Image (tube, rainbow, N blue to C red; front, top):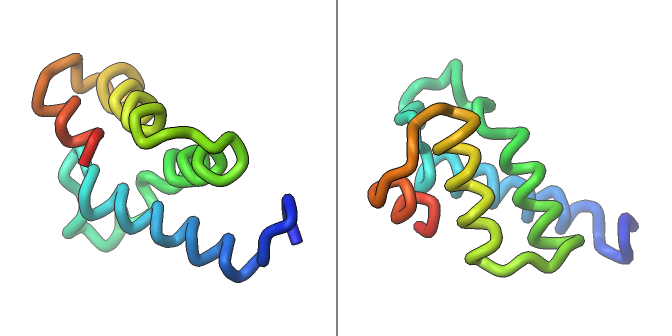
Length: 87
């Protein structure tokens, strides 16, 4: 067990985070493109670690996602993106 957690439960939790990012966050609108279903996996991995190991709050994870979309993806800083990141 990693960090005292059941590995199967950990996998399921990571899959949940992945689904949330793909279907709820999705700042570049790829949820209906099967070939791009893994586009956000690295961000899901980081968000999962933040949640499970770092005990990050929802606001901390939202700030991370906002920064990824605004800076890394080049979508710029705007209110809509901030709201999507908190979804």
